[in-house]
Length: 486
Image (cartoon, rainbow, N blue to C red):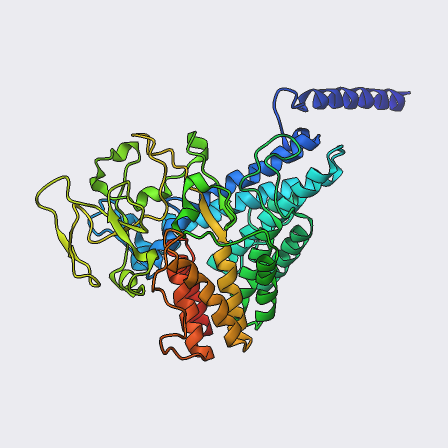
């Protein structure tokens, strides 16, 4: 009897404790969690769009500026008050330098959000099956693209492909080859399911400008195989050639007649921009300050409002390296300039330092800067509110597909084919504003240049510098080119 009473008491206590435990279990009725959010096709689409928002951290003062300043195409203004924070210009940085961590803090959130979409999305029932397919493909593309960036910067990194894996506070580093194979799986799966182009709105009425396409996945694969072939010595030039040629042969993309018009806000969504970070210039949630690093300080702009900071300049070597008369080197003065570079002018004081153009020998004046500043990223004039930048940040352009194909063909021994495609880029530059017929840059091989593999390799390498100037490509080119040297 005593034993029976003890059991009854124990059960009563156990049930009471269970009841108390149930009372302490929080039901998230008043707020959203990852478990409660992903219920409908619209939720999945919104979660996918959120991945792109994380990618915005690539532009601006962090990763983009770090790569541009680290290369030989640019230098930091040495009178910039905060010049000490731009160590990459002097290749003076380590693990404690804030800017170098920007890749990590930008790209792993992209991966985290993509992993959530890929974990929750397949189980969602929706009548809009096509958009669901696109969403899952977008997530795989963005995850693969993020890992591509990370391996270029850090080599091996933790490979986290599920939310559970990301719960580990101290993941171990994964060998770069393993990460690359995961990237290839993501990008090839994405390429199969992404649309060639998007309609103006997705299945839920959201704008689609800047969303990933089949061409974006093809470009990322070409980019990866280019890196693996030149930097890692994998000899996968055929894959780089095949994927870049898919972009070229798709009929979806093309070169604009005017090089500079490619970047103008009025031409958003043009056929040359394969993948971009979009900046509407309407709200602070859809803008970037990256272009302000290039604008002169003496335009009378209030820096507190996001005016020109005059930080980034071409090195004298790079500015002088263009072929004489190349449209991509043109320089003018003032915000209304329609040129690739802009001079600061001398509007603030009569004590402006001078700088002599080594090509034209014209003495220029500039208040706080020695020489011209890049001006291909030219925002719309919207008065004093300079923080509202509407210039899209280019990540992949059709011109790069042509140059990757030319490089791959040259390495495969098809030097004549490589020269043909290299000259497509030069021919566009000769059009100037679109209807001009300039003499330069002349077709490679028509001025006595040697047409052999080493010479054409050098020519393509230099053409990439001119064509993709200040698009955060040059540093990676320098790294991989050093990797292919004997």
